[in-house]
Length: 250
Image 1 (cartoon, rainbow, N blue to C red):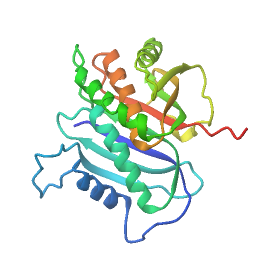
Image 2 (image 1 turned 135 degrees about the horizontal axis):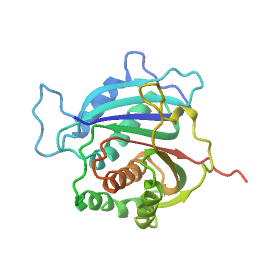
Image 3 (image 1 turned 120 degrees about the horizontal axis):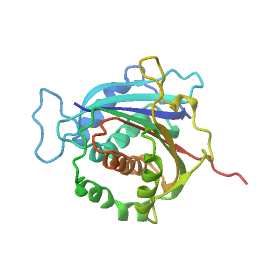
């Protein structure tokens, strides 16, 4: 079963924290409400897709560290991460706001054990993401961000950037960057390196213009994941982050 680990970065602006609640319970309840998770004792509904199984979710200690929360789910068999990720980011974000007003600076997604794309990647997955375009055009303001894709095989960074640039629209625009513009990416977003997990592959930076909101962030990352899995057949692991650029006060 594929595992998806999501991290949120930023800070809580005001306390709405309820000591009798925890992020796992709130995230679980929100997942059930939206129909994206069904508890073992309940029959799945035929009217809504079940995307994941709950594994864990925690708020991080508020000690001025940029990471504020984490969540981990296991994708249900046959559910592509391209379809599940926008819903997962939205659900995670909704759950965080139960605990107070949040200023989010970005997200990081680490996926492992994914189902490898077939030689001819299912185009309907990409089409599903582009069906949302009209919704974003009429309901969202634009913002800027930096996307970082970690641990790419040598030579695939330029290919990835080129393919994403081809998929750019008026509302979602990707552009290759040689450095990290805008907000410095928190060091905690860098992949954790251990003797068992040495640094492998290359890192690719992209400038990104996208609508505000977690649903848009999830869509932008899902499109990138589609291309990552498509470009190199057999890829089953991926890590990428999206960090919002700080507004220019000038």
